[in-house]
Amino acid sequence: MKKIVLMAIVLLGLAACSGSVQYSDWNALQGEWQIVQVGAERVELDKEGGIPPMLGFSKEDNRVYGYLGCNQLTGALVIHPEDETVADFSSVGRTIMLCEDMALEDAILAALAQVRHYQISEENHLQLFNADGQVMMTLKM
Image 1 (cartoon, rainbow, N blue to C red):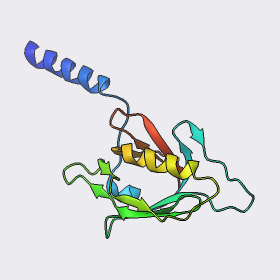
Image 2: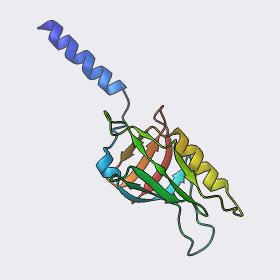
Image 3: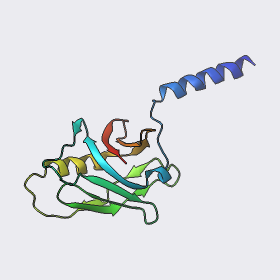
């Protein structure tokens, strides 16, 4: 009996130490999300009436698409078959229009290249995390 109680305490302790991020499932990811933050930088529109950068997800064809501020983004979104919270954005690409300032687009693509997990909060914010649990991007529905 003591061994069972000790094992339960150890398991609870390990679960508490494993991090506070609870990742979401693929069904909750679907739809279009406005990018509001990349890394520590808030996304601000340069001009009034500008179209905000966004990402969209389609489960039917495992596709990600979006608008980066000037160029379009498209590609396959690979979801791990055994853990739907694991996402791989390595096959995304963008159109190649030359824009005045491409720093935000470059930052978005760099962040996506590092994404491994995602979480959707109760406030309908999507956070994309790297393998270490660091927030790479925040989006809102």
